[in-house]
Length: 264
Figure 1 (spheres, helix red, strand yellow):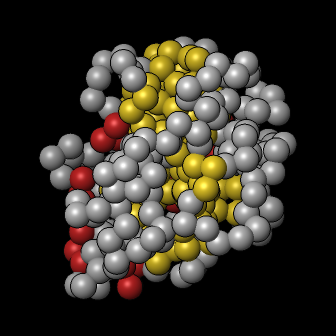
Figure 2 (cartoon, helix red, strand yellow):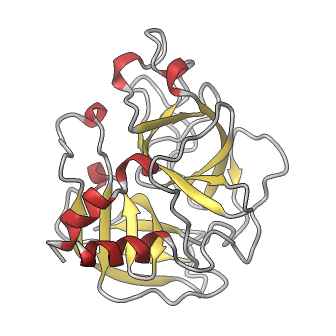
């Protein structure tokens, strides 16, 4: 239990988290746009033989991603990535040493929840003005309806469209659970351990999985409130089918960290 508390403190109370040196462009509502380079400095690209998913750096040697992203045995993460078609200089490529999927994750039932995983890196990332840590919310923290949050990633620009080569961002207002769980929305497919955000023209898309839902707290810091989990099978921008995220405040708990401490 003591080791679990140490790890809990290590990944939730890191000094200086959530404050990027390069401020993101958040001044207007857009369906999606190229992000200002290095303005989401905790965003990582998760890669095996090729880029597969996104992720979030939450401690120098820990990355948060989606459990459904883990399908191979060997992964690396790339930090300070912006344009995937160019070697721009500040990138850091680090192999994943160990992968821990949520103990209740069922890969045959993404809508059952618990689509979250922690990756232990072989070495710590070098923290600088382009690679920084995200903040994690307090366990049980809730989001208000229409709270403005941003999804980031290199997923498809639209359903069936090309994969983004430069990091994209989109403003996704939160859709409260009581609305998202209505029968003509997601119904029983969404659980209280999930967060719905966006809808219609604003959505994550295939390839954004595992990446962060970034929400700014009252303290001015950016918190990772969600891990991109799934969109509607008929298309990323389906009305009344907002993007569904694993709710970080409902999953990163002492229970999960105790489980991980037994494995490290």
